[in-house]
Image 1 (spheres, rainbow, N blue to C red):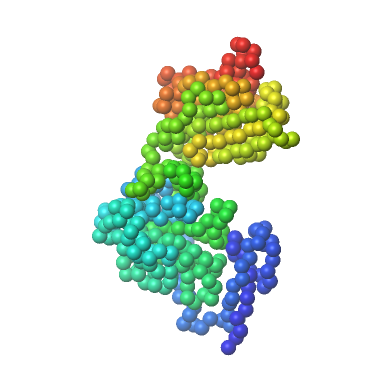
Image 2 (image 1 turned 45 degrees about the vertical axis):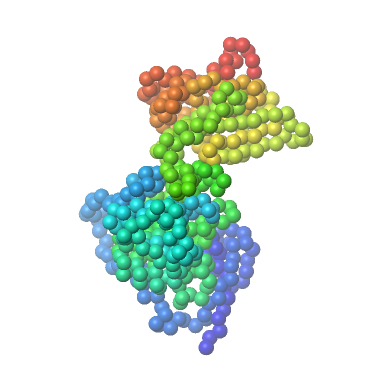
Amino acid sequence: MAKAKSVYVCNQCGYETARWMGKCPECGSWNSFTEETRAAAPEPAEKKLKRAPGSGAEAMLVDDIPDEAMARLTTGIGELDRVLGGGVVEGSMVLVGGDPGIGKSTLLTQMCANIAKDGRTVLYVSGEESARQIKLRANRLGASGSGFYVLSENDMTTVEKRMEQLKPHVMVVDSIQTMYLPELASAPGSVSQVRESASILMRLAKAAGVSVFLVGHVTKEGSIAGPRVLEHMVDAVLYFEGDRENHYRLLRAVKNRFGSVNELGMFEMQEAGMQEVTNASEALLSERAHNASGSVVMCAMEGTRPLLTDVQALVSNTVFGNPRRMASGVDQGRLALLLAVLEKRVGIRMYDQDVYINIAGGMNLTETAADLALCAAVASSRHNQPIPQGWAVMGEVGLAGELRSVSHVERRLSECMRLGFDHAVIPRQNLRGARIPEGMHVHAMDTVTEALGEVFGWGKNGRR
């Protein structure tokens, strides 16, 4: 009988080597190799995977492919349908990731119950919890349904058999890292186990038209654990964002083959489960302090959704040799760039000031349209001068102090006007061909100096 041999596999890209390496030569990841034991001889014929990856289809001209609308299944949760692009596509595979305890299993249990109530069959496969535990969570959420089946199993062979027997419309696998194939010698959660288990589920989903949701563990850095090929195999990748101590949860789509990417859904964690927040802008501004310096409202675009967010800044005299720069919800490197622009182009002394930035509600602003709001918040806190009531600020700031245009300005202005912000400072380039909402007062500016002067009235009293 042949001896087993050890190989080292990269958890990020699946690269294999005969010896341990500190850095993966394929993807450049450090300390990502784990040891797996494999048989040196070929597997017996009866243990080989009898799953052909192809279907023998013929090549077709693109013009001859029939135009068929994708059938979508509503989940009964409006925010989840928004992130998915309008509902669950038949035969799709969706990967849901997030920190432990943030609400992944809760949301998917609610989704399964809603779909089962519509007369469809749902299979919830759990490799981490027993059927009794799932029953307790379902009772707490009020989730029930004659077509809601629960399977506590992590053997993919058994899962495949039960799936073929029940023929569900939707299946949830919680989590993909706990699934394993007996014919593979590696432990559950290893690269080979995760890759092969996901391949089986993908084949079943495409062949039987079953919509599959995979729950994925995350690493310390917040990315999906396991090989990166897992994210390439699925049709959509959804991430839960937010702190477990915060009652708001943000569900973001970072990949979606059937809808818009970077779409955002907002939920609130309550005793009855995950409740969707339909008016996210109002929720984010509900606890905003009025007439407080360092607080500025801007409209961010999350996919196709405009959201009013509260950009907060606190500036104080430093007691350290080097002033502190701390940012939550924005890139710290971008903050350092904007502070340099304020000091060089506007003349606001920042070299002896500590600066703290926070985006209220746990939001994470990645677009450059928040640049002008950050500058206004810092200037407001630096001079202890509040922003006038009903004003919103947005625009990209260049290194020369110029304002650059932002996208979807009409939708941003409409959202501002809907919540009572009837004054908006925007780049002048955005006025070309833009339809301004009735009653909105737009202040179009060319430079950050002009914009701050318009907001604070510096041009009138000369204060800076």
